Length: 130
Image (cartoon, one colour):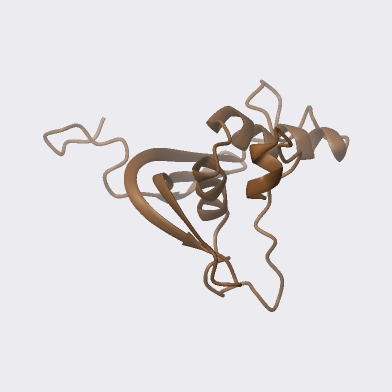
């Protein structure tokens, strides 16, 4: 991927590539980790998000329902915080890549219902909820 991206060939789709064999294996265990790895490879945040939301939705013929925050679309939303942090990415071959940013999940909403929320997400600095 490094060589392709360095030559301007960006991914159309980014996914976790999880399977029954790799579902809990390091380093392929979470999509935010994979997205952060693409940031370290020099892909712009907007391109990374587009490659895991809008483009797959278009290719599946579901652009009005998923991969968008438009009115009438499914209310399935993941909210992330982009944190500045030194991180070492590794692949299954032991190749490493140093990054300076990581996407950290803050909230997950499915069909309009909050399924996950970081304890400090949405709290005011004094700890009182908004």
